[in-house]
Image (cartoon, rainbow, N blue to C red; front, side):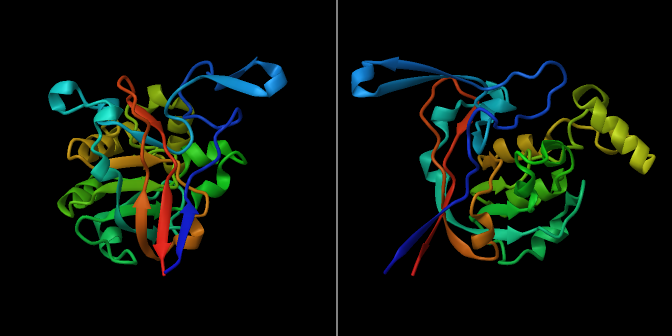
Length: 253
């Protein structure tokens, strides 16, 4: 038997694009401190958000402790590993909202207890067109999230900017005003009426114990349409509401 490990993570470094919050951008800082230079010993100090690159959201990211909002170190390790599928949603375009009907028709079939990785194809924009990457990706809507809960999936990851569609960030005129203006101009519709909640899919999935990972990519195209073992373990931080992971797919033949 041979084992092949596929890296489904995106690179992480000083030019890692971040979620486009309004206001001044807070870049990631990698300050280099070198000690005992003659031995080439190096220590890098990192300053920045834990929600950068391929990362896992802890329940505490969107849930109060009374709702089960635990920190990253309390995410059960058994939920970070399992059998799953990489489904092909690369045909879906700008602002497409994934529906339960799409999930029913997904290939391979999503089974009870699966890990599910959504390949939207949007990872091709990472670092090359960050506006497109974070503002236009096809993403989940709350009905699809409820379908995944009923299917009792173990984890959800995607080649998208966030688990929720960019449009599900109410009130869009305040959270992403440039996107609010673009959507109104292009569709003639009011996004605050069409998408009246802030990150409902995050809340639906995380309060039901489903692990969520954002900004997947890497070699995901090579596993698309296949069933494999999926693993992504977070670091054990007691105060983190999320953190970077190395998402991998494992195939044994």
